[in-house]
Structures are given as C-alpha cells and as structure tokens.
Image (cartoon, rainbow, N blue to C red; front, top):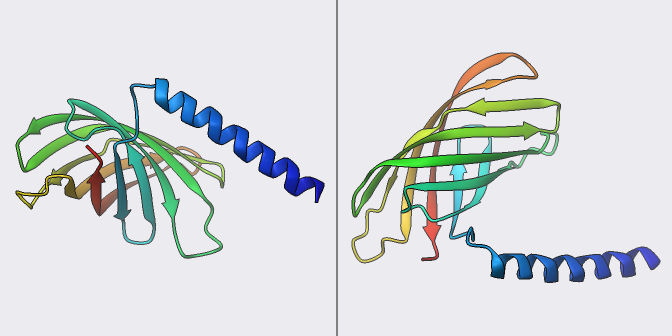
Length: 150
C-alpha cells in the first residue's frame, strides 16, 4: 500500500513538472505516428513536420513478448517541401536494451494525399543503419501514418 501511495505521488508531481516544462518550451510535440518496418513497429511523437528542421522520438512497439525494448531519436531536414509532399533526410541514433546502439541516416517522403485534410500524412522512409553492439549493417524501410496537431 505504501508503494502505491508513493507511486501515485510520483506520478502526480511528474505530470505537473511535465506540463510546466511543456508550457515553457518552444519544442512541443506536434505530430504522432505509427510506423511498420517488417518485423517491428514503432510509435513516434515529434515536432512540426512542415518546418525546415524537425525531429521525432520513436519507441519500439512489437507484439512479441521476448523482444527487448528500443528507443530512437531522429533529427530531419526537409530538402523539398510542397503543399502535398515533403522529402527529408536526417540522422538517427537509438538504443536497444540488449546492449546495442543503432546509428542511421533516414531519408523519406511524407505525402499528404487529402487536399482538405493536410494534417494526415503517409510516411515512406528508408534508413541505412549500423548496430554498434553487434557490428552489422542493414537497410530498414518504414511505412506508416502521421497525424499533425497544427
């Protein structure tokens, strides 16, 4: 019972601190995404996709219980922007909790196919990357959807 009370107090104070930090920050999460790359899916939050530079934080989301959790951060630059299409390239670094670090260079397209609803985007992305803990190289491709709040 004492553990639950401490956990509740910690959650309340953490929520208050996060809300205060978000209110003062200029880097607010403005998009969410769900991506699939063959074996493993990802859930992402990030900054404004229509800015010259944007970033996102991706969490590994899989239905296999034995798979270890991973988290990635990526910074992208839009090289070409149009009303319905963005082309971006960036740098990605991730940590997987089986002692492996992943570094990569993602490049991809965000396509906004609906003229009257530009907040919805389809992501097509490829990322050549290397696992430093296991010393192997691979090419990951992502397909997914993004939704912007602005």
